[in-house]
Length: 311
Image 1 (spheres, helix red, strand yellow):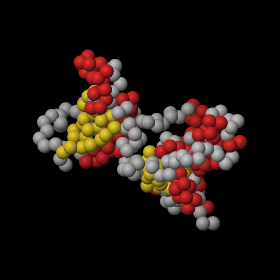
Image 2 (cartoon, one colour):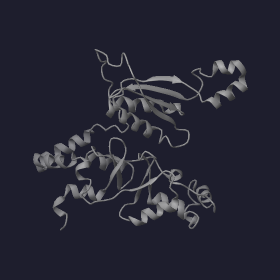
Image 3 (spheres, rainbow, N blue to C red):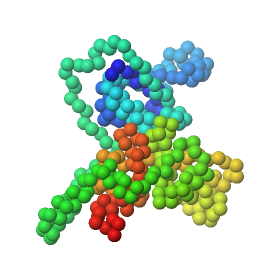
Image 4 (cartoon, rainbow, N blue to C red):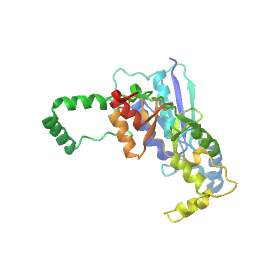
């Protein structure tokens, strides 16, 4: 593969640590970070502060944007780096996200080193909890009460990957773009009533958010049933906001942070994620955050108890 320069102009510097962690996990070999500022913003700065404003615009105290440059010579790492950056900024097609582009590079010296630095310990956005003492005691009680075979059987079920059980019930995900109007979202969800979670993707088809039936109902029923909201905390203002007669709300206006399961996640991790987020279903994504399926609690149960399918 030709060496490629991956360049990200990041408009929100507070996202920098999260992006660097994601790129480290993706295997990006190194990153150069430069303070930067948009031309129009720099023009305003100079107009307000004169020459001193021009000299001080790149001081560490300035909250301006950051430009990240990385030279990558592996196609898979490049694609993963692009996917992670798109996910961290919630889509480069969203406002104030920044710009990502690549440039093919000719001769490169120093990209490959004869001695590699020790790998950075992995940092997960969703770290797994260590088993508690109660869980360890529970396992000991199970072995004493029902025998070691019970634990072996359960272990086999809990470690099954979601990619293996994904199409047990043939659930089709419902997908919309971030700029899809709410009326269209309602139409698509009515067409597939077995799934009650909308996946919101950007122009690169990467998962940016989710909309549950409850979320959609809150927005669309607030003007019709305001008494359900006005007595709640912030409910009055919510009902007032959503009752505007001429508003055109889009998927991006009401979506929540994406909750998902990777195809490589196991059944136990996925069930715990559902319980933590009070959800009964999740979109399933590949390593590049493209939606490849949908899974719910019934599908997890069907995977654990296949003898009951088609009875």
